[in-house]
Amino acid sequence: MGVSGTLEFLSDLVGSGGHKHKRKQLQTVELKVRMDCDGCELKVKNALSSMSGVKKVEINRKQQRVTVSGYVDSNKVLKRAKSTGKRAEIWPYVPYSLVAQPFATQAYDKKAPPGYVRKVENTAAIGTVTRYEDPYTSIFSDDNPNACSIM
Image 1 (tube, helix red, strand yellow):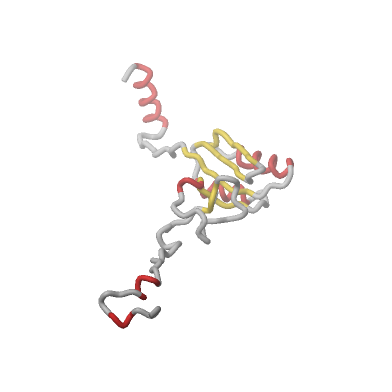
Image 2 (cartoon, rainbow, N blue to C red):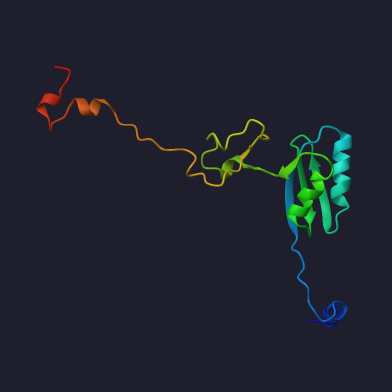
């Protein structure tokens, strides 16, 4: 720890009254926000950029996707996006390659952007695997001589 590191530590220690507060982690929050025009996009971008801790706001209007990076809480970002009057939710889609059964009823979504499907919590419970039994194997049985129904 050099001189500058020692000075930063001491200034943080003195500035916070001797208590070290926990700092938020840098995270990326992705939202789906309904935007139709440049005005909507600008309104959402200005509202989210004005939040404390926000480093970057990226908007993809074609996908209705807003990506916010910074030292922020995802619930506060969602609340601020909703305060603009737009319909907003946490990004509900995952890349197509991450889902075991992307064409299952709950995962497949026609409104999803290309290459994405809806995020489903329990993929094992989505589809039921049924075992196909060949009907011809039961017709000819060596165990039962009367089972042959063709003759």
